[in-house]
Length: 159
Image (tube, rainbow, N blue to C red; front, side):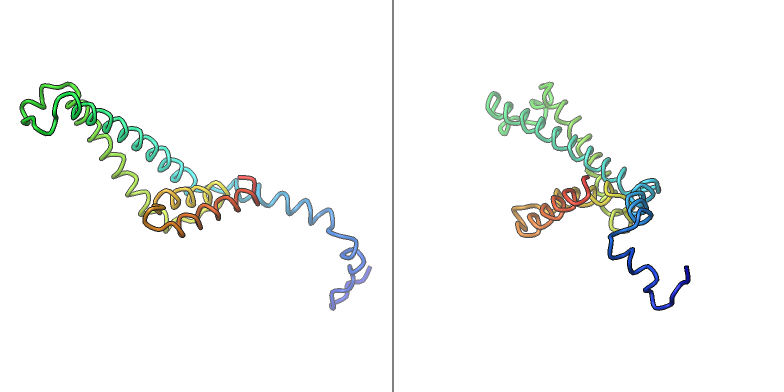
């Protein structure tokens, strides 16, 4: 078979649909992309896990504080009086852990814009982080836009 430079040599094949080679290549391409080292996905997963832990710790801290305000008139107690409560020590411990997780997440968040996602997990991870960081109370339209992009991307790519 001779090759024609005008691109019509395989015209009959193209009218019948994609070739087997094209189909196999297209389905294998995402596998090769996912094999590359995507540093974004684990960074985002760590950020999301730390954020979840941080939120749980904050809720626990709030429960303790609410209880102390209700049962012991917490706002009226001196520092020495507060130190007598075991809840105060637990709250201090929670504060430290909350701060550590927050510092870690700020560092990861600062690094994410410079990192390149090479997998669906990485892209979805970045979008999930952005969705949490863009507060719906402060910018509802942007929050909803990010949520819709994440939803659409997952629907298209099965992530």
